[in-house]
Image (cartoon, rainbow, N blue to C red):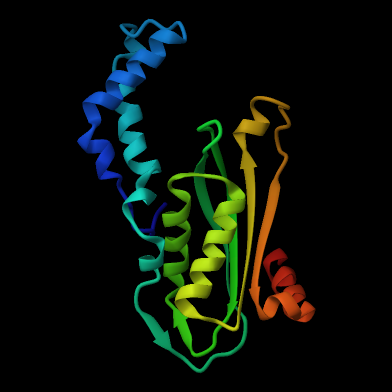
Length: 197
């Protein structure tokens, strides 16, 4: 994703030969001819892909928010439509969608690009959407100590669209609410209204 720091899983690189071997074995076990031209470089390509899509294991998401700034802004801040790609831990199938983050500062703010980096750090690992939503909210709450945080995550899961019940186009929406958003229906409504625009 352009503009977002690329996290790379160095453990994949350190174990490249083993991973390539196991990918080749899986291809054989599903009935493929690993000597076929189109598959000759597949184990290496899959390994390079793993370095990228599992790059979140190399970073502590709490560190991603980095330097915060003292700012006397106590109104809603929203970064919406942050695109993410992740892998379902149940089937290792992709899921993807958008994250919307809103918070009401209590004296400290983070650089807006840091919120996109936080999403990358949390989603670039084996995940479930519910955990992504909670982790982002909890980290924002822990690091920035805002008056309130609200996170909404939308996702399309290939484990549901391309297999199993096979319902393409269905979306899952999860939310996490912390602090003032729990008690203040007007703040929740403002956030939900603004992310729909």
